[in-house]
Image: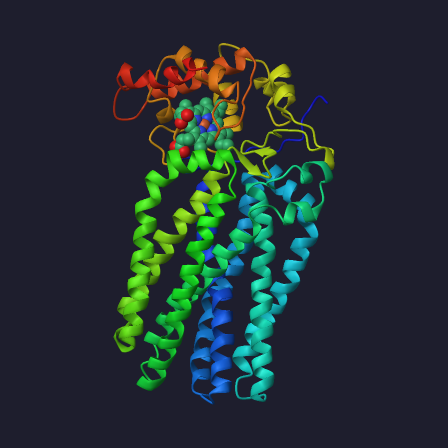
Length: 471
Ligand code: HEC
């Protein structure tokens, strides 16, 4: 094997492709969880309307259904396609790896999604036009199809974390991948939280129903809020179960980097959501648009962003199945799929020789092109997780070296912990000496030209060396 099956590297300055993916993903999760959760709220409410003969509840379902058609389905579909595009350029091999395991799961999901979209139209436009029992069956079919799309996707994204056993590596079978160790826990977290999202959005819809009777608004709010609270409690319990199903690298990342940053926000979201739902139950008519919309935004942004960020970060250094690193290098052999690890080949031959998308003039390092090669190598090896600009928000690489301008110090880190795979959340990156020198020269230069001043003091710059010396 002379050339590895790599793709061109897509680099998004400052925020990296990770944040592009994260922003699209958060919008998608909010839209899709709201619509799947709402499908269940509709089914439960309509069952109540049918059993207790309260046809006026159907007014709410119709209005919420139209709201979903305009917002959730359009935003959800557009961002769904956006996710495909973003992951394909950000992580082409991760995406290819998933397709090789899950192509029929995606096909099945598409079928359920089609049923869901037809279902929501049928639900909204057939109210009052077909008999009530048939309509109730349509609504339940819509709810189950919606949840099926979530169930199928959760199998895939939990496999991205890890299969959790050795079977899949040996068999490569879709079942071993899909029923991975954190599938049920993850499905539980999302199923509970979709009910919360749908309740919170449902309160926006009820707040807008000023033209309807107070009795109807009260009855809707009093039915929705307990469902939201029970969903939230279930989601919280499943979250603790989920934590037990994580791999070692994820726990390190969680304890060392994520919880210190996000724990306060997560507790705040839970507290505010519980207080809000209890308040709404107590005073259903006090929930105005001015309260409902900001609370929705707060829960969506402060709740979903850290959740998605954490799931993405905890997977580090891998993007999928603990065999494809974030930087697209294959981390290990997967006999079940005929896949071979690539770290050692790269160490022996050098990335410049085995990567297909290196311009010919950069394949050999010279004093004249060293910085340019260093930048390209850093882009390929590190930029999936680190921005290359000083001060950039996505774990800026110059900042991670604390502004160091000393090439040897930077090279010592790469030749130490990175080469030996000693950092649990970073790939093992083992490169020939001259390639390490090029990356180090580029980073030292980036720090020497930091905007707004000089490099930081030598005492902080010494931190990575201390880490390297532990080796
Ligand atoms: C798959 C993702 C990934 C890749 C690829 C990656 N890193 Fe990291 N790196 C991380 C994470 C995650 C952290 C933890 C810090 C954080 O979250 O802010 C980190 C931290 C660091 C630190 C700070 C020391 C520490 O242990 O926290 C340095 C220095 C660093 N990376 C250098 C590099 C260099 C140089 C490359 C490329 C040759 C690279 N990284 C490639 C994910 C990655």
